[in-house]
Length: 60
Image 1 (tube, rainbow, N blue to C red):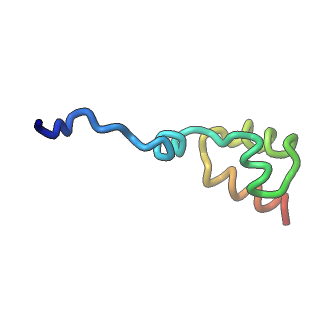
Image 2: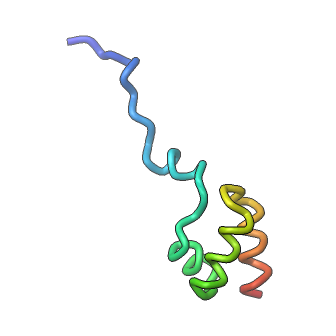
């Protein structure tokens, strides 16, 4: 049996890191309401760095 390296599967975590946050996860992470989390995610989309900054500003 040979090892076929052309069929490597990407880890699920890496695939999710490219898209926007899940509202419930983001709200729990920053200890904010689901409504505030939804607003931040809608505003910043897939830019997780900016979304995290906004989440930290609200939770402080």
